[in-house]
Every structure is written in C-alpha cells, then in structure tokens.
Length: 291
Image (cartoon, rainbow, N blue to C red; front, side, top):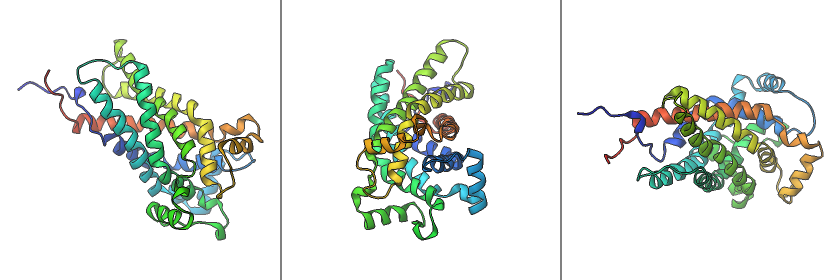
C-alpha cells in the first residue's frame, strides 16, 4: 500500500473555526487589553500599565473576562469565513488548477463579509464583557456568559442592537480575511516555489507571521471604529462618520489606538490559527482522491 502524503490532505469546512477557537484561548488576554486601550478617550496608558491595572482590580483571571464570548465569536465569525473560503477553494481547484491571487482576494472578501455579519452579535457581547470591568459598578452589564449576554441584548435592547456595528464589522472582516486567508495562501505558494521551503511547520510559521502583519495594517483603523460603535450606548453614534469624527478629535493617531496590542494579538492569533489548522488538516483531513 503506497504511503500517504499527509501534506496533500484536504481540510474539512469546520477546521478553521476549531483552530481559531484554540488560538483565541491563547491570545484572549491581549485582545482584552486591546479593547481597553481602544475604548479609552484620551489618556496615555500603555499596554503594560493596562495589564497591571486589570490584574490589580480583578486578579489574573480578569485577563480572561469574556472568554466565552471570544470562543463564541470564533465559532461563528471564523467558522463561517473559513468554511466559505476553504469549501469554494476546494471546488475551484479540484481539477488541479491554481487560483490566481485576485480570485483568492475576491473569495476572501465574500467569506470575510459573511463571517463578519454572522459573528457581529458574539463580537458585540465580547467587547462588552471585556470592557465591563472599566465601568462603574452600577453601570456594569454583568453578563454571566456569552449566551446570557446575547439573551440580554436581544430581550432588553432588541434584535437590531445585536447587529450594532455590523457594517463596520463586515468591512473589517473583509480586510482581515484578505490579509489572513488570501495572503497566507499566496505567500505559502510563493515561498514553496523558492525552493528554500517545504510544506512543514517552518513554512506555516513564516507565511502566517507575514499574513498577520499585513492583516494588522489593513484593519487597525476599522477595528478601532468597530470597537467604539459596539461599546457605545444606543444612538450615541448616528453613523460611521460620526464615530470617525469623534475618534479624529484626538488626531490621526486616534485611529491607531491599541496598535501595538492589536499587532501583538492579531499576529500570534494568525500564527496559532494556521499552525493549528495545518496540524488538524494533516492529522484529520481527508486524503486526496486519486487522479
């Protein structure tokens, strides 16, 4: 019986969601600190100072506030975009053809927009749960977990509120998915063609690190506006433009608040997601059909 080349195994549609959830467990504290930095108006609190403040006020587990919402977000947002991207890519390349980069970008854009919309309710609850500790005790929402948060949002504020910031979330998801999925695929193929790489962990680490860097630069301004809109009281921002104007009061760098933790968080999350994804694919993926 011929030996199976595991690098040729095909991932299943849900592998990306599982891998993203695993990565989120590792990077959640950085995501929480990023949200805290982005939602402060003024001030110059550093990443380290914010971390000390959170631990001092809520203990070490305070860095994991909202972890259930983070996992729910990955199993909606990331599951959807990976499922669409990988499923359609599998169909488009089943005859052995290589997808040109523009097709990858187009497919990633559609997958990202779809994932961004589906994941908006969980993302809203995620932002609120992470930011709850900064509010006065009387104003805290005190969601028990992600499902309780979704229930309270819908029952008290209405279904439409659960999709508050959906436009911004979808826009951001398009850029981050292009940066992550399309660029990862393209970089992986280009690096393989150089002859210096093989389809192994070193290739996955290199490709995903570069993809995470690109995704951070593409998405940071949108990420700041999305976080602000989701955390704002109902009616506070009349439009995306009003949100942009409010942030712009602090100057252009206001759109890059939390850039360092965003980079530190999105980079490792991207790397871990693809490392987990590739390992899951290699061990649990389907063997390719013989030509």
